Image 1 (cartoon, rainbow, N blue to C red):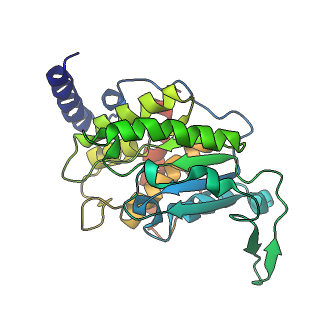
Image 2: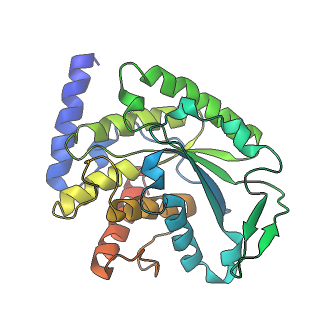
Length: 274
């Protein structure tokens, strides 16, 4: 397919998907890895940028969903966020995040007592996100490809499974959805990495309920609803379980939270071909 034909295809796909509320047309390449298996991860490191740390950090909301879904074992769930404002894959020294006696070395219990952790493995998965347009930027997409491999290799060497977080389009540039979906899925397949389709969930939610604002005023970063939607996608992708009915609502009104939970589950099922 020529560059022009591909551009036209992506534009048409975006328009058709917006019209029918589906994201199937936005993901041209299908993911090779569609599940993390029955022993789903309980510990995660989020490696990325401000898209992660807005709204008290996405990792805290994912933890809220996980612990609400499994209250009897909530102490088993742990997550850490390592973010740099504006960063791309190449800004992060992933291997250094797994060095001994550093990240995860201690935490605080509910009484604010320091607890020094004795961990067999630091994290089950490393969830990595490039800068919001790096995977598709003409001057940066080769960097994305190179560091997708380097980050995956570093995570795997430390005993963690590499996971790519497919980010969302800017509010005023919906054509980015299909482009980012393709870039992340191709990179995931090339590196045997699991891909979380958060960007496709944003497109589905916008198509179904355009009056719900998923964005901060800059039209790029997430509102609380956007962060919650992405967190529900992460939860469902990692665990293979629906977030629909989960009691953790992140302070969002229940009808809106239930809508976002449903969108997340529908997106995950469609992307992985369930």
